[in-house]
Image (cartoon, rainbow, N blue to C red; front, top):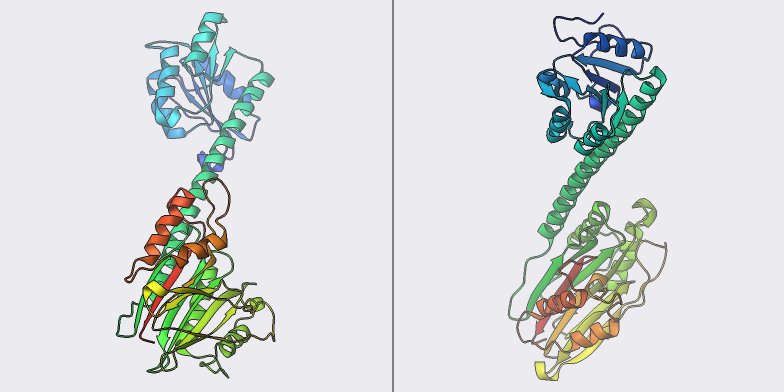
Length: 414
């Protein structure tokens, strides 16, 4: 028999084992009834069910405290008990945060529709006239417990997903900060000025760019875009950037853009880099001759505004027909040359700059982007910000789906 002098907790299962926590998802029943004989009868009904852990509380004043401690998956509760109204106890269970969602089955000697309606109205999940048949009681317990366990599993999975997303977002943010930290600082001298914007997308793309002098007269500049998104794409872009900056590519004529792209194609085959390839535009300004030599691999063209003055700017599209880098072995690239006038500015960019989905769902046409850029005749920095503001107006939001990367070069007195 159940102890009639003190509250007791009876566990059915392996001797000496502790009641499992919710994370173990055991079916755990808590009976609250002031009559020990009822507690014993319910215990006997469940005694042979090895998957069910049974607990009994005969003091209704300790019901909430006991439920919070045991975290049952089903509560069985009598309605007629001394010192507390059973319906009020149902209401307290529902007002208590840690018990508010636990399935509650009312056990009552009364089968009155009005009382049933009140019990359900206060949050009871089921109503049984005691003592019910064993098979029916087991079926109700397992039904409600299974539903609650599924809810716990869903919540656990959601919390795990939120945590994994938090970790991923943190990794992405760190990768983004690292990429930004290695981007070049601005150059301002008597012959070259630079300005750039790098706005990572929410998924972090594979954009990267840089520029540096090869010698007193030659100035190299380039922008690349690795396929896909994520940390892997960012790492590959950084690796390519470092190879170009250090000029560590073997058997490469760094004065010949086509030779540079061919060397990159040999050094970064996609099968050795998680099937990732990249596009790139690479150019060299020779300030003595006033020419730009350039090559591209599957990348958007550079846009050159050049003329004897800002008012006389004409647009030159420095296109390139080369294939993507890393996709195929032993492919050839071609170099091209463009004359620059006394006043020139050149824009390098990734496709995220112009592949803007407008608020009506249509894409901003590339020709409209080129036309917009051709009208930028500012004599000082600020062109890129004008474009960013326009793109955000087109999209109807501040965020970009892809990395927004653009570099502006002003070549003075070339």
